[in-house]
Length: 425
Image (cartoon, rainbow, N blue to C red; front, side, top):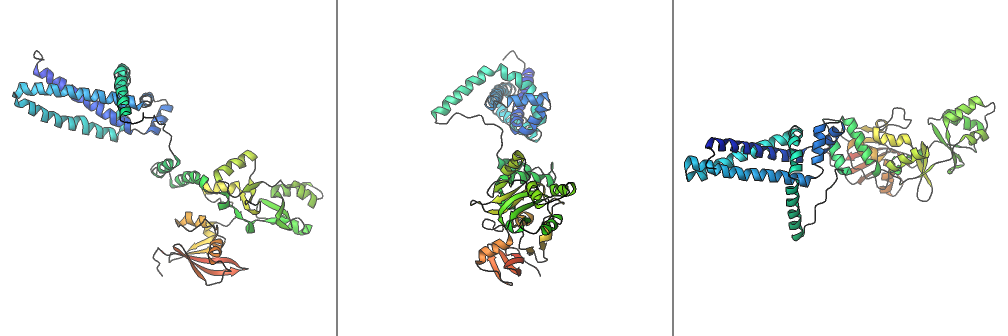
């Protein structure tokens, strides 16, 4: 080194610091880059993204390469700084060189490049990969050697060999990604995506039309009564039964019935019953995501819900499942939540007894119990254990229910107060 001028050594030292900054920034950018954005860019044909993605397929090799390069450069830079310091300041130059070099490396080769790389990972990683890709091939034997030594030492200390994990995310992680995408997604789209993720947690029994609200026609009624019910039906599908709903014989499409009325010269009860489709039965415990697939696979759009004993509990359609994702359809004949629930000035809710508890929880962020009963009427009766009486108040968890209207032992109106929320008159 004696024949090399001090100026040349300083220039080499500066180049070493720049190279150290390159490795530091590259390490941070490669580790913080958004893998899904990277994969999307690679699929779009971005060559730089493809290079980075290939490097990240073996992160152990990439980290080893960066650390070897960075540490090697820092050691050489330290030696050169010591020589320059001794030439300029004699023995005291060792301490001066160490202090100055430490400060410069920390600021310009560590903190600054890593901060920039963390803020703009793609801008740093993409151009860095141009140098890093051929460098990895060139130094592969050295990287392999150091990785083998590392694995041997890990086994000595009882640490299992690292497993290269995929980039797949769990449903909870995906939920977090959706929740944090407010700047990229509208609130409506966010809610739809979250609802799709929730489909497997919700069962058919949670969203079905209850048995007492099923619109059906008793085929044993007089023919004039049947025709009148048919022409005034508010629904597209009607359950046909004999005497009782438990003896259901078919599902009639109203549009098909209207077609037969206009085409047939004589429209009879026998023709009506032949036009009915075979009933498609659905267990009430079926998750919504599975039932949506079953509807598509069986080419069905509606089904009768049964419990574990085969007794009819309700009715569900494809529309009901889709409403869980996109919200209520304006064409739905069922009463909307706005019609069933009226918020009061004091924070309480005036509700119909048939209102679905789960709908209230979703709309108002409440946590009404929905394990035992699905409607307001059900949860109050379950808690009372007796026939409902107007004016009676009960407390369930953090909520107070007041019965306002009862008809035929069924609660028609009730007032719900959230006890943990202060109320104002």
